[in-house]
Length: 355
Image (cartoon, rainbow, N blue to C red; front, side):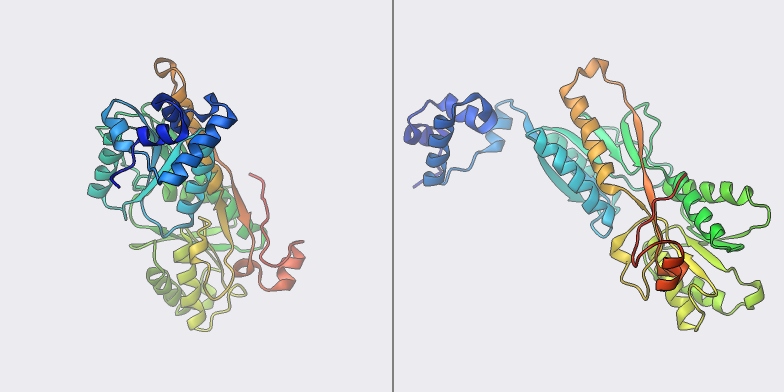
């Protein structure tokens, strides 16, 4: 038997071709009995809708594309989960493509999604502070995990300045007075904002010293381990008693470097991250970090996108939104169960902290 067509399904179900088309695109328009008859015919015949034929005939592809920088970060799963929930609620499919921070591949996927006549796109761009929208964007698009000014596209991101403030305040409240900040050498928007937030809190506490250093690779542990090793070799009197790493991977590396040299973490040096990347939490101890609500970010972005798709295009106003983050207090800053208990927390606890 050749390819099963929509007419084959119509004949088997005893309905018109247009009724089958409505079943595929607007099932709410059909009675329960017709939906049941068509579903049975599709199952019996093994019919698969030809989306390409519909697109070539001038129809829209009821789908949105999500372009992410890669799959090795917890943000990807969270953003996709939130976006998928909104897509399904609006009878849209969601397709995800990872680019591994490759600009050429990013452009290729953006062009593919637009050429497939998807109704909209979500983009998690490479996080450089100099990133600009793709010049060929021709369908509604929302930028995720990158805060724009709202002039060209809607965007949704974490409040990264608040993230920095939460991190600095946590360590100061624990009595730490000499803080090292380990940031990426590259100009990354989220890192820049987190550093500004840290600096704001430090400026409010004249007795707190801060030391800044950078790493080339903030997505792996090796450079963090080198920082930890260098700290271990310093005179304890001149060594920071706390480290804020802008990424969790770097923080895990710092802990490994310190512990390899028998420096007590957190007794001598407390260490924390700033991005809630669960994929890096298999280190030598539970990591204190600031966790953006990635699921909320994906939800907010998809809601903005659906609003632009379904609304009046001429009247649409681009917006920039931020989602909240929370402090997750763990062993790397407060020690074992006794330290958590002193803060009124249980093991592996998450503590919401005020701004």
